[in-house]
Length: 432
Image (tube, rainbow, N blue to C red; front, side, top):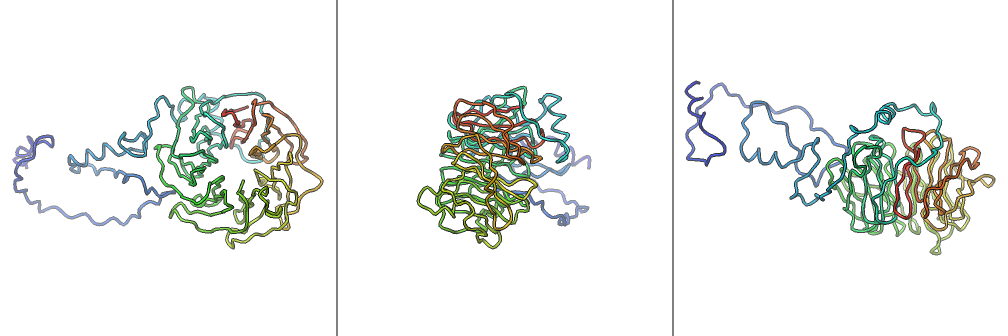
């Protein structure tokens, strides 16, 4: 063996390859047995990604070609892609998505997730963080359920911004420009650092936030205005578009699983029930559609509507939300109020109670319940944020936030006294 070591000790991979010499036969070599371990199943198919790097076996010979390839494939801890990757978009001056530089009190609060019902929601008192970066109106904001220091926003400037809200450094962590038209909605996945977005370019796009790349594109024949992940299966999401199309997609195959067909106007919003067996859709009735099509409750598996004449008033409803625990849902109405409906057939409208005082005035103003269900918060066309007692529908507080319309407001998934909001002038804000 000493002779063999001396014979090959001066040969380098970096030197030009010469005429190969006969290799010695190793009679103690046994071919490796095929592995019986199953390949891991990832939550989303990476059809557009480079092949995942396999961990090298200790002591195994690595050729020049393998070393060159391994150097160009991104590792999980190093999400920066090669400049030659067609999906790579240079983002100079952006911050990190890590929580390592968060203030200690914020980090400890995020790590201690309170149980539902044990911590009542509190009304924010003041502006905590102003996030500036969108050049046009912002249509939606959404907190990450798994990395609660991150906030996503979707803008009319064709971008999706990922904000590291409490970072001491640069708060804008990512900017994605995969859409070639305005972005209407964005949602975080329940599994990992993925966001799903949709917009006027007739597509929905799944984005790996950590690596900064688009992993899948779901083409449609209509402007896609709203998307929503299934509450129990993050491989499924629902989309609604400008031609009235409602489609349930499977990200594992990239195909439509179910399609819900009825003569609807443009879909304004969709919302799953708590058990995920039904969903409610809201559509525009201004184009001559009868008002019975404005709000419809659907059976997901049977693909049939379960309701008729739920909302008889001739107003469009840009937002629908289920209460997290109680058997009712609400609909933001262009009649400048939020209507209340039973979540059980025949889904009757509550004629004696509704949330009033804020204004919609034709803007796509959204509303949301707090984590404990005690508060309902709504944006308004007057630039204010309105807080209601969800049980009594009484206005608890009005807080001026913007000079132009406040479009979306979202409670933080852990911190009960924190909300995020966005406006028609492109601002994103966090109040606490």
